[in-house]
Image (cartoon, rainbow, N blue to C red):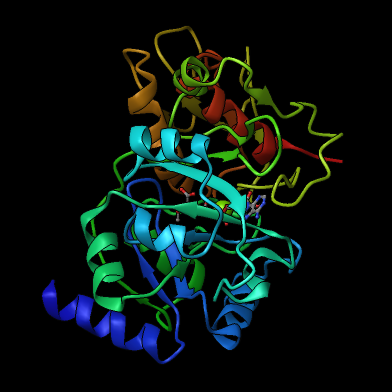
Length: 309
Ligand code: TXA
Ligand code: MG
């Protein structure tokens, strides 16, 4: 592993892209201070330039050099870093992060990951890594190495860290305005954040109304049709089930969690969608999943996967 990390760091220093595991999903990393590397990252992902990237830091000290670290930021960092929380903060005037990283915005999305491989890379790289999820824009997120290869082939170096712990992306919270605002439901239950900030604002759940960057309506989408909150299956559909119920598929069934455990379901979500997203099947039917705790983030991903204009 040591040699692989050194190889990854050498690539990154040369401005190349490297995919690596985090505790949420695999990230496609590039040197956040190198404009060419960042531009290449947007290209490789087919990501629109208006959708800003998350920066990954080794520790809080390196974050503080780039952004204005408010009192609220300190509270969140102390409670959740290293870990699956992304905090949007105001960029410092003397920040060395390339403007393309945040699509010209005056803010930076910051996160200190807890995955050991991700931290080792950051430590040895001694820089900042812009790393969106390692999938093509609008496609399913990667939670294991072969998902990354499915998206990019062999021309990107991927460090294998097995299946990711959470299986779902970080929770994104915006602290750049007066009131802390949740921009994306994710691996950390917003209820826990609400205990710290009772005035926490939640962004509109109405997918049709969402206009801000990154909240693209069609996202996380498989290549075959997908229906959610299904009560009855169509003849030729495969089933992504949850808990115990009467749903049945004549073709194939995978159950996110037979015991209705939402952590287990989040961990399995993209893994199972990758398996079912196969052209030999006609469509994916997804059982209803409770909209509580992690179920909120799971439903958010599924609604975007199934969204059509
Ligand atoms: O768990 C995760 O967050 C993973 C791992 C690899 O860290 N990364 C990830 O990145 O999910 P990505 O690019 O797929 O999602 C980043 C989200 C997008 O919704 C983007 O619009 C938002 O963060 N974002 C980034 N910078 C922002 C900013 N300055 N203001 C508002 N939203 C921002
Ligand atoms: Mg993504």
